[in-house]
Length: 346
Ligand SMILES: NC(=O)N[C@@H](CC(=O)O)C(=O)O
Ligand SMILES: [Zn+2]
Ligand SMILES: [Zn+2]
Picture (spheres, rainbow, N blue to C red):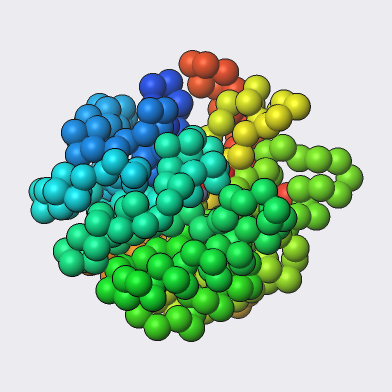
């Protein structure tokens, strides 16, 4: 007997769509399953002003396949020049749903990010007043801190002091990767939530490094040891409304990944729902998949849940996802979950 699971249509609360040829290649992959996504603003140059966000939203809408039902939820890239009035007006217009903080140098295209947090306090203060969430790439960038410890150090050195200064600010700690990140989000007072990616639920650093280095598993924050993966799986499948899906699907052309200095980012839009169903089944928590993928995110962002549904069906035959896509600029490899997937999206 085939097992089926019908859930409200999911949303992706952390997604990189890029621009141009890459946007055209990856947008249909997200729009097929997801109704909405929080769109990351780390283009080159970044999406900094309301005007940038409006223009980017129009390019995304223009790239949607005919008949697709998908709403991009725009964000602004916080810089030390960001104008609080521009941010407030964009939020009041319904154009943006969050502002994104990249510590300068932390990740892909974060050169324009924030070096001195105090310099953006006027913007953060305004956001706290109007209830606009701040999404954070939570890693310190000081060279002495080991790359595997950057998230934990961020909690102590940056996040806790920031939240003490601005306790009313709504914060989403993005793509959490450690047990410390999980514990902080679960236990801290006030308005805090955390997104978890597909790949951090599926793989740990052994998958990336044992038996050869796999550049398509390299992302930031970097995948950690198995005990952290277990903590993330427990959090995601717990039903706790503070945790929800942000795939961090982050496409880079194969040439940029398979290189002596490869880019960080995992492209997982296509097979995320099959991966998640597998994880939730393994954790005996299929009944919490809808909360993680479809309910907790909208609640957090003050948006209605989606009315339509998707159905997943567990079949003996594994899913047949393509290993890679051809974009107009070259090949793009899909996340390889390192195990056959049996949950098909019907
Ligand atoms: N996650 C990644 O490894 N890369 C993201 C940036 C980010 O989300 O940090 C990208 O834009 O490629
Ligand atoms: Zn990030
Ligand atoms: Zn990201």
